[in-house]
Amino acid sequence: MTAIETISEIELVQLCRNGDEQAQRQLYSRYVGAMFHTVLRLTANREDAEDLTQEVFIKVFEKLDSFRGESTVGAWIKRVAVNTTLNFLRQANRLKMVAVESQNLPPEAEPEVDETAWANDIRRIHEAMGELPDGCRLVFNLHLLEGYRHQDVAQMLGITESTSKTQYMRAKRILREKLMVGN
Image 1 (cartoon, rainbow, N blue to C red):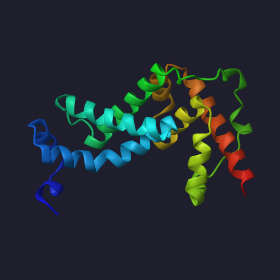
Image 2 (image 1 turned 120 degrees about the vertical axis):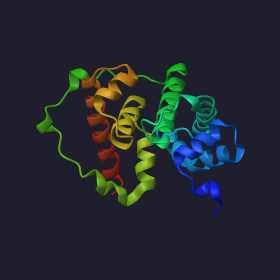
Image 3 (image 1 turned 60 degrees about the vertical axis):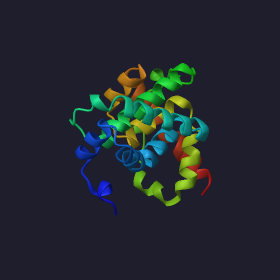
Image 4 (image 1 turned 30 degrees about the horizontal axis):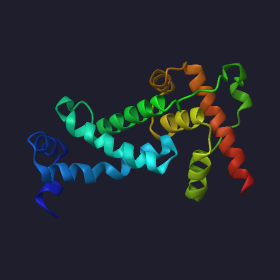
């Protein structure tokens, strides 16, 4: 293990800010895999995800001076990745939400799902997630996998919190149906 691989995030960021190419390669290699998968889950398109991941790291290195250390470097890079992806989807006119607020179900009508049990067949789950309608897929990924609250998801996507919750419930229902068919 080289010395650059063992330094702290803050030291690595400082070296990157100073133009150290080895540090920049290390920062990239530490986070590129996770960011690619984040972008892929949001776009459901491998080619777009590859291009966007490169764009994310271009932005990261251009804006590294704006990193204030209020969160981890990984969390900051993830925010850049999510924002870059959402901007891409908006520009490509692929960020559309289905108006489903009138379809709200009372909480008791939505059965609880043990989401951790889905981990048995990751490939099938990823395929099913990729087939979700865009709005459902984005809300599902941002809320469940990226950990954003519905209020934050709503703000990021320009929808109401109620629409975020409804899209999430719809995504769970669609996934449950798709995954049960394969059993």
